[in-house]
Length: 153
Length: 200
Figure 1 (cartoon, rainbow over the protein chains, first blue to last red):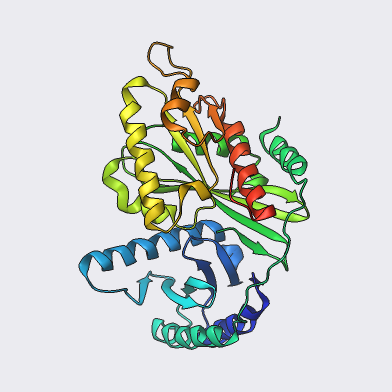
Figure 2: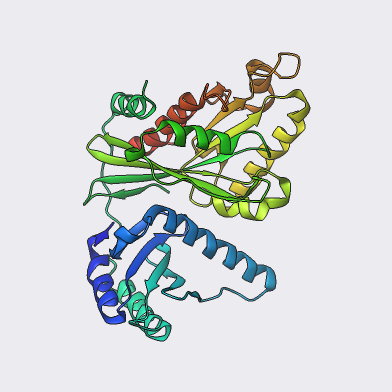
């Protein structure tokens, strides 16, 4: 399990255990991963988050064009596994959950426990996001070295 | 907005390549994808039409390595350039930490560059972002074309770069200027993160 902030961990672990889902990714509406749990090695996490955020953003926009408000969630059911995608508000802004599940559970259970998970997240969130100095003032030298290494120059 | 994981000491930033259709945004990402070692980049995802025009976005995650003790990752996105796709452009632009404006240096594309730049400003404003507060660099692509077809770096700076931000001449197809552009925007985005001040 990986989480940007530790308070996300316990509700996420509980959700995965109760719903019997295989993978859960939490991401910002810009597509950046804030937490991941489950068999994430089976998934290209960053690409999945970018695509999930794209689907959610375009669905929200379609809903707006149709005058429907926001759609709560989306489900895609495949032969071997399904995907549940839902956006929700947190004290840290709007997040998106992408849940991959197999035949060992059902979309109904995933949906049920997901709502519970969202409520628990809201209750667990500390009021302030952690703040602090991030990069040293003279980070440019390290950045230049990293970019040179990346491009082989 | 940049995500900073203090526990795992990890930074993730979102960079969007913006500009008119066929200016070379996807080509920039393809060049980066081709040059960066496999261990330092993810898969490049392209949501394109059958004619290879960007439909929604291209996406390429790269790992810059450790900077000030933080594992630093950049997520590179392109937008679809054609004016028809403005709704999707707005979606991709959400939460951008920096923008590379890829202009087409051909004289005949002058108006398209201006229109796209105006569109960028409008779309950012709609999201409550003042372009003057966001790290932006310009890339003048296709400078390898015959001189009578393209505008010079100086002419393009005069026409587009009102704020005098960093600008780079490029030939993205062969890689010239691609690295310099990425370095330029990376510095601005990380500088902003380091001191919390607006980008210069």
